[in-house]
Amino acid sequence: MKVGIMGGTFDPIHIGHLLAAEAARDSFGLDEVWFMPSHIPPHKEQAGASGEDRLGMVAEAISDHPCFRTLDIEIRRGGVSYTIDTVKEIRGSFEDIEFHFIIGADMVNYLPKWEGIEELVNLMSFIGVGRPGSTLNLAALPPYLHGKVLLADMPQVDISSTEIRERLATGHSIRYMVTDSVYDYIRRRGLYGIQPGRTD
Ligand SMILES: Nc1ncnc2c1ncn2[C@@H]1O[C@H](COP(=O)(O)OP(=O)(O)OP(=O)(O)O)[C@@H](O)[C@H]1O
Ligand SMILES: O=C(O)c1ccc[n+]([C@@H]2O[C@H](COP(=O)([O-])O)[C@@H](O)[C@H]2O)c1
Image (tube, rainbow, N blue to C red; front, side):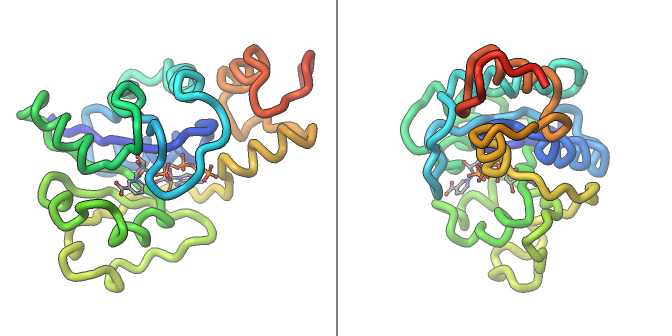
């Protein structure tokens, strides 16, 4: 079985994440994609929603896809979510699965700075997708990453969770940037400074 892991902060999950996962699944015949929110992301501040709410939004976003699942291993473990720790833990439980970690172009360029990356590339491969604002140049990666990052084509969407949080805090609509189910979750829980009672 081939599984894609879509790791992220998902604060909140948006259509860029969903399109990336679907492009990877479709391009490489993945049987399933597991969406895995981090507890504390290794390289940036996470100042938005709680782990429970980020996981809740992911569950809402993917509920209608027969091959998408949630994985709460990093939220449950707590602390800083280094992927090397997670992958070692997962491989112990799922020995027969071939894992591919799905990342956007910004993260592809950042791979050399990941904790234990030279060991990690021997435990799984990466599937990279394009992202507006980041140039993908696999030849510029260090030699130990050559052949370890496969590319999937996805429709380019210039959307980030940061932009969504900013739009909500300033009273703007995020309709169609996230699924309706995620927008409903944000309204219901009053996340990101959304105005109470907002229905548009
Ligand atoms: N619009 C997008 N297109 C392609 N990949 C994306 C897009 N947005 C996020 N990703 C990828 O999804 C993964 C998780 O991203 P993350 O949850 O940090 O979202 P983000 O939008 O970058 O968040 P933030 O704005 O809070 O930094 C990363 O590998 C990232 O590169
Ligand atoms: O392990 C690391 O050093 C590392 C460094 C940066 C990012 N990651 C993982 O890459 C995924 C996307 O990261 P982010 O911060 O864009 O949400 C998420 O699962 C992170 O835990 C992992």
